[in-house]
Every structure is written in structure tokens, then in C-alpha cells.
Image (cartoon, rainbow, N blue to C red):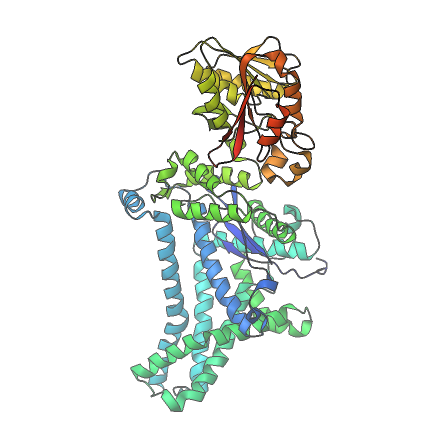
Length: 606
């Protein structure tokens, strides 16, 4: 293998059935779930330049990185276990009781308990047990191995190393841990492949080494060695002050001293690891060799699927570090409703998306009224997957109702997609005014019908007690296709005509409604991203001042509106008074405000 071209800042960790990679501003975990699908969770982290100055101070930074790595590593392991274990198809009575009574998933509870047991076991195995055995030996041979002497500390350190190696060997007996070691190998190979300057393909990664200078195994080995020196020095310096040989107090004080000095050990070990990783000189290889040899135990050759996980996580981190707009992703796992809601709202707020969209997603996907979303419950893995699919698509900027494919308007289900504007609540005020105005036998025309929402609502409402004929027109054939579908869905009797406003319309009407394009051309680029990038510009652009369509309607209106008939128009904010001037020759005009108190509807009688 050729020499490395670069030493990347990206580090990683093997997790259950996957790999976590951590960069400067993002971390990503890729885990293969029970269905064989790679799930990815990607989260933003504080970049180095914005972190505390203490993270750059030698020795102190080692302690901080050790604690952060421990916390993040534990959380990542817990998250990966939730994905890897999957959803319980037939939960036990206890599991159901936990979910209903305490709103806690059994998998999450088991993972937390396992973590606590793991921490306690590590303290017992690597600190308490070596000290206890050495104490027994020292008592048996007090003259040869006096308490706090050099041999005492060397024997204790030796036991710690032996237990560490035996622990690793014992873990090899577990099939699941052997698989985790394979993912550990995939993590190292992927990082090495990138550092060799090779494209990140499965074949290229396979060829790379599975040992790495910055591995956590090497760090742990250094911790074991440095601890022997640090603990021995500490024991020597304070022996005459606090230690009474072979007493319970003495034993406890020694144990507590080791716990207190752990940060010192971690800080020194971290600096040595960084120093060794910076050089490939043969002179320092003997210092690296023990750690690299241990890596041959804690890494195994991965299969192609494991390598795919590692590449997925690595590439997502590269993407997040290169692009601040690269979206975060979440695992689909069992979780509390409140937690899922909080995460979604936080990410929506960061993206400038209305947080209420998170409530709509949860309400419609889980079939829970928005008013009841405050009631805690466990969201199952399958439910969470559906929620996150919609959530992640919404993060791309695509409007929520395009994602769902329909919205509710005036009590009716209206199909919507990128061919039409999404009906807004303020437009319901127009429909309300029209329904109050229309009389039995009237002929109604809806211009610029788009999705047909206005025409469908008027036709359905009028049909309850009146005989009304409704015609709807639009210049877009695509929009008319959507409108016809909405009329069919709601069983509305509406005739659709392709027409550019009145061009193509025949006859005269008692009532005309219109929600024409009214956004000034120069303001379209300043609209919300989802409106600007997804909703049809044809339905937005109202010309230089946004009033072009109103002028065109006013010009030909007398030919199509019967004497005494009414036209009801929706308009943009601060446009109503200008529209009244355009229709200055009318017999009667008034402005109606929407629910927010804005002048939204103009009613005109010829």
C-alpha cells in the first residue's frame, strides 16, 4: 500500500451493527436495521473554532475529549442498539405496561441498564480487582512487596494490563461483539482509504489496513501504561501522609486516589497518542507496536455490507463539514412523542420552517388530534419511520401539503401538488362571502381556479339548499387536471374550462370569484423558500405592482357579469385600496378583512 497522502481529522467508533464517524461540524452513524436497510443519523456538533478555549490547551484537551468521547460513545451505542434490535413484534405484558404507564420503551430501558452495568463492571475489573489482588499479595509477602513500593505498583499495573487483554480475548467469544469488531475494522479501513487518497468504494476500502494510529484501543493501552507511572508516583508522594498499610481506610483512599487521577492519566495519554500519530518514523514504532498489536484483536476483517455502513457514515460527515445546509437525519426508533416533537421543532426552527408543521406531521401520521399531542406516549419504530420520512422531506423545503398530497379547505379534502398553489386559510374568507351571496338559480364563475378549491367549496355548499351552476377556469391544463380530480373526490358539480381569464369564457354570471396572481414580480425572490422554489410561478406573479390581473379583469368584467351581479376578489396585503381604484366605476364596493385583521377580500357590484 502506498504512503498516506493526508491525515484526516475524522475519527470513528464501531457501534452495534454499524459505524459512527465524527468530523469538525457533524457526526453521522450508519446502522443496518433488522430488515437489512442502512439507517443514518446525522447531527450537527459545535465546530472547533466555536468550542471553549480549554479544548485547545494541552493535557486539558485530552481530559475534555475523553469525557466527550465517553458520553457521545455511550449515547451512540444506545441509539444504534435501538435500531439494531428493531421493533418488538409481540411485546410482553411488561413491555406494554412500561410503554403505557411510564411512556418508556423496553429496548431503551434495557440499553440504559446495560450501560450502567458496563461502567460499574469496568471500574471493578480495571481498578478495584487489580488493587485488591495486589493487596493480598503484598500482605502475603510484606518484605518482598511492601505496600506502596515499586513492585507493588508494577504488579498492580501488570494485573490491570493482563485483565485488559483477557477481557478483550473473552469478548471474542461473543458473536455480536465479534461483529462489532468487524465494524471496527470497517471504520479503520474506510478512514485509511480516504487518507491514501483513494475513492471510497467497497473494493478500495477492502485493500486498506484495519489498524490505525488514532485508534481507541491504542489509547486505552496507553492509559494502562501511563496509569502505572502516575499511580505509582502518587502513591509514593502521599504514602507517608495518608496511608496506613493494610487497612480498609488505606485501601479505600488508594482507590479514590486512582479515580481522582484518571483525568491526569487521560490527559497525558491523549498527548502521547497525538504525538505518536503525527509521525511514521521507525524510531517510534516500538512505542506504537503494542497498541497496534492489540488492534489486531479488536478489529476483524469486515464484509462488504459493513464497509458500506462505514462509507455511508464517512461520506455524510464529509458532506456536513463541506455544506452547512446539509440536513440532519434521525434514526427511526421507538421514542417518546415529546422527545420526537422537540427534536423536529428544533430542526424546523433552525431551518426557518414553521414549527407548527411538526405538529401537523405528528397529528396526521399518528392519527392524533393536534390538541392531544401534549399527552405523552411511545411512538413505535414503524410509526417513527413514517414520521421521519415526511419530516426529512419537509427539511428539503418541499411544502408540507405537497408531501401529504392533500390539504383541508373549508371542510373539504383538496388534492395538491406542484401543479397548483396550496389553498390558504385566508381564502376561506372569500368562500364564506361567496356562499352568503349566491342565490338559487345563480351562475357562478371562478377565475384562476388552480386546485379548484374555491369552485368545489362553493358548489358543495350551495348544493345543500340551492340549485347553482358553477364554472371554473384556468390557463393551466395541469392545474385543471388537479381541479377535476378535486371535484370528483368531493362529488362537486363543476364545469371546467381552459381560459386565460375571460378569454375562452362564454355567457354571463351572477357571481364571479377569483384569487388571481398578486405577488409583485420583484418580490417573488424574497418569498419563503418553499413558496418560491416549489409553488407554480404562474400562479404567483402579478406583474410589476402585483395588480396586472385585476386590471385585466376590470377591463372585461362588464361583458361577463350581469347587472347587479357581484365579483369577489382576494388580494395581497395593502392592495385592497388600489384595487378599489381600478374598479372605481362600480356601483358598490367594500373590503373584508381576514382573521388576522388584514384587508384581504374586495367585493364589487356593477
